[in-house]
Image (cartoon, rainbow, N blue to C red; front, side, top):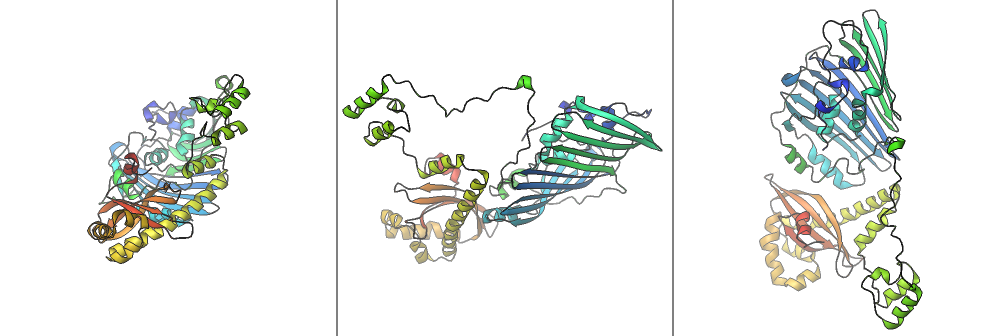
Length: 490
């Protein structure tokens, strides 16, 4: 996670409150110093919106805070919506700060999606309180400390910090207008930065104490706006008694990367000034055609003689009729790609909508495989060795033998699944065997009735396009990543 320390920001949000001998603020830096937290109870709200094609993301933030330094108390509620044509996710979070400790939890989730794995992962995240020392990246005196907090807990879904830190570090682009009114002063701050629409309005008492603040920032499709004003009562917090560490919370996510179903929604990028602009480099794949002297005569010679060059690319330029003919003759053999490589190459040229449709189709495939895996797990929990044996691949039974399979089922498989309460997919890998049969390696986490968690990888294959998937192998107490690193699954 990117760490941005308040001490290195050049923006005026790091300034202290003006002295008691007060005159109207003359610069944007001085006016923004009035937004700093003085310890007086304060209420704040914010919302952010962003869009990329048919994907929409929004966050709403409300909160209160009181005190400074070690005595800061803060309570913040965050609601985030993510929507696209086939999916909708809504998450509710609560964040607390108390005695230099940051607490956060997901209080509720609402999901309408074609991917059933995401629902399982979201439910696993609910109502677990995480506690960690308050990160130094959070400027607790800033009126916009909610931005630092969301970034610190990896929940800055709309990348608010990227846009707001541009504002924080660009004090020289700000302008200030001052208006006097009965009982106080009004300030209007704007930015001259290109591609930014920034407006901050502040009302203060005659001695410079903040009475009301309102701000608006837009950059392309991204919008961030909110308000701040004094809070009429003391801030009370209900500190959780049972908490987990951030590492334990990550384990409970079961591999869920939020928002995994959409990836990162990029903010519009401000173009560099002309003096720093450079023409983009040519793509590395656009390799110039090699120079082959008298290439036509050389190709004819190779065709007749059957001899080949050490470098296959010099046999003939790839994609030409000559290269195809030489490849068929075995003179310049081409590399054979497996189905996984072909899928990855095809995905490069897909549009965003085509990629999402491909992902939905892949999710349905995974669900079909997992249905078979769950049936196997159920038979094992009920100690039904006969039904377990019928779900194994014929190749596995033939290679190990019927007696060996019976011993494996009774001594390893059934004892592993008997205490199981539930299982969830952590990650997966689409694979194929040496006969080009398609299959999958499912890394699943099994939770026992006592709360213990165990990893396993179950390998399933389609013997043919008309039959149900069969179990090829199971690896207990290991992960898919470990198996790939060892070269067992590739």
